Image 1 (cartoon, rainbow, N blue to C red):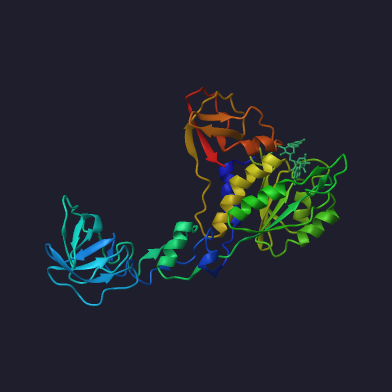
Image 2 (cartoon, rainbow, N blue to C red):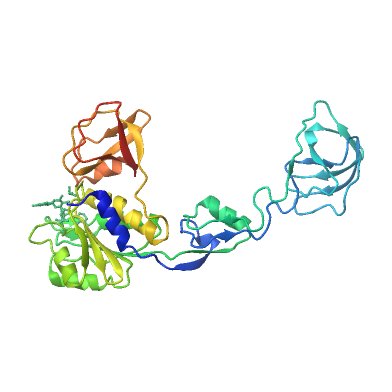
Length: 385
Ligand SMILES: Nc1nc2c(c(=O)[nH]1)N[C@H]1C(S)=C(S)[C@@H](COP(=O)(O)OP(=O)(O)OC[C@H]3O[C@@H](n4cnc5c(N)ncnc54)[C@H](O)[C@@H]3O)O[C@H]1N2
Ligand code: MOO
């Protein structure tokens, strides 16, 4: 069995970067930028007033010679002793050296003077204070709402992003029916495909849930055939050593070049990965928590790398235990746990079938192989879910 880090290196080697496409800004959030966004203008493009008040030249008192509201610049410049009534976002006229807020001003007809205790701020945003022509929002990065606002402000209506990686998900097993169907007493509901699809979509993938493959070579072969246009094919279940665990064999018959099978991790031991034609293939174990944990550890980083983000594992944090942990065995253990102000505490039940426990967890504690028992107050590493 290989380590999690070795397995990650293998899956990154299987990844091919997807090409790029242009999308309107409205559809850009969450996508990975593939070409720098370059500012087409300065922001602000003029000296802008920060406040409502008067743009003044020289020392007061001043004579009000005009008005500058946002979008309605005052035509002309001002000389010493002049003031222009100005509003937030208005263009500060040439010649004005500051804006006096209206709360500090005493108005007498067309004349204004400073009241008691005026504040000394200038209240002018200089040209390009936010960004200048040619400034860049550099690729690659996953576009946040703030990034989208910035690109809009740069007057860039379309951006170049990585195409969404196409992910085909194949659930396998005679016991599976879809949510909402009427299961026989010996059947269960296919849950993993839904969880993994949601996870992959949050990473920017375009996901297809293929029909459930039955535990026969013919059915698996047919469903693999439906995955031909995918960049990444993910199977769920049938990865272990039982008589009905056919995924590895059928994939091999279809030309899958296996990179590895079995990892020293828990849950998720019977994971496999390889290359199938143009696509990377990952065979996830069927236990729901195993499939989801492997999704976090391998599929999410793979999807990121496919879109041009750095090939790296999920970030780990460190936190203090608020409940003790027993010694770990020979496999790296990803324990479902809750982190709060008191620290981090592993769930009591760590069976890899328990979706209630996974849904109640907000982190996975990362236990290295053979990690000794840990006391309250000791630090452990964790991954956010
Ligand atoms: N003799 C051994 N038995 C098992 C070993 C082993 O090393 N030796 N490994 C165990 C481990 S660890 C895991 S994990 C599982 C993985 O098994 P498979 O990948 O072959 O998965 P299945 O047998 O098909 O299913 C396991 C379990 O999960 C349920 N399942 C499957 N697909 C779904 C789905 N899409 N949605 C919800 N639940 C699903 C399935 O009904 C089974 O209950 O093998 C152990 N056995
Ligand atoms: O590795 Mo299995 O995924 O422990 O249940």
